[in-house]
Length: 291
Ligand code: GUN
Image (cartoon, rainbow, N blue to C red; front, side):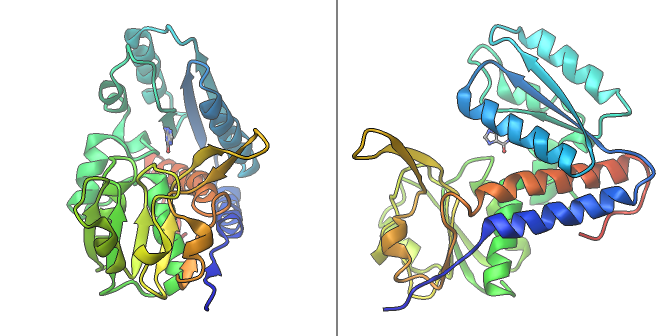
């Protein structure tokens, strides 16, 4: 029985954040990231708090805007317009999900694409899909960094992504294509999903179903990148976090695997900080940082 090497996303993210901080230290100005949180979703509050702390630790300004859950769409759009026009703000992030009365696409597409550090704006999605320079969604970028750390060169490898969301599945497919992988986007309704997964040299699980991907779905030696963050009950009545992959089974077959927590999760904010640095340099007419 072999045991997969565990990809240490926490350490790799810390290294990337340090690189961002080093580059920020060389700038003649402070990049600024504005984060908008609408409502009281507990998970969103934790994400936003972590973003704020790590933004400041990287030497950047963090501008936080907390709005009531009943904030109107027009008021939110007015705030975005103000931040678009604010020269101290180089990145704008609207924490998702938004309350039901707000049209998420309308809001995302109101952000100046050059400040869209989440890479969710339709212009950035289109730039990515057509091979143009784009601000690119943070979690997908994190997945590819981790796969490269584990495998080195990705060229020619078979990549299977389980999940087709705009935030993860579709952009990670674009990024892996750019790395010259052969890419399949599968999802919960794919026929013979286990067989499709077994083709993968790189298996990206982003389907949002706890422990759905089993040991015998994994090709021996494959690199498994688990994007899932699911809270499931424990026997003692508390909860624990698990991914979309059945880790204990997968670790016996895979060549390398990301844990949950401590795998893809920490990469998201590190990549957000890198995007903010990139956006800031572009907006200020400085050369692109080499990280
Ligand atoms: N909600 C869950 N993940 C994300 C993310 O990456 N960005 C934003 N803005 N909201 C999220």
